[in-house]
Length: 190
Ligand code: FES
Ligand code: FES
Image 1 (spheres, helix red, strand yellow):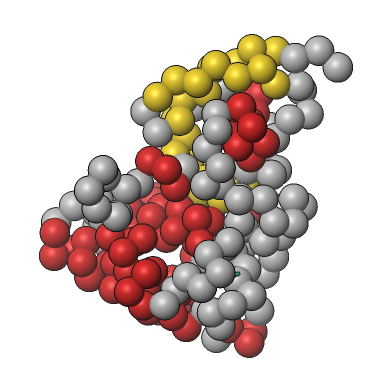
Image 2 (cartoon, rainbow, N blue to C red):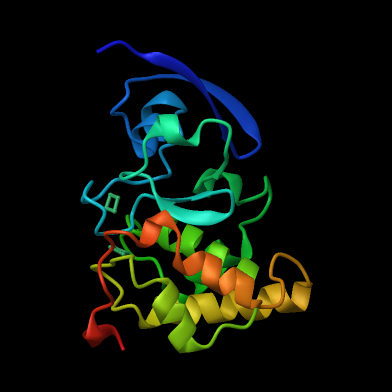
């Protein structure tokens, strides 16, 4: 099938990528843009490994077509860290043991960043709800929740990234495309 040239705006940079109609955003990011930090696990919308942000909201890269997001603002794990330091969420995952094999970590980090931008002081239950669509086979989740709590505290102290929770933000987040087809939280996590 013929390919179409699209411009993807990723981490504040424009990438021209040739895609087929069926190519996913995850594929375009990895193979077209060379941004391999976004992982593909199930490729079915159930594990959350491929989570990236589109216009600030978490979406599953494996269920989103590259053609759908032309002109939208895309953020991946590569866009978070500065040249000299990790993003506070990445740092907290490292310090709290929230990342072991690391395969799920980019997805968890992007989900957590989106949460903390709209809710600067989430409860543990709110964190669990936010990450419910992300699966991890290593950590048992408690350390991931610890990491998000620690990052929230650090961001509040730094006075950046996170902003006060608003109902609009909450309702917007619950309706995004990422929630469609995603796995419900396992009761064992709670
Ligand atoms: S790879 Fe996209 S949800 Fe698993
Ligand atoms: S750290 Fe290995 S799957 Fe999450």
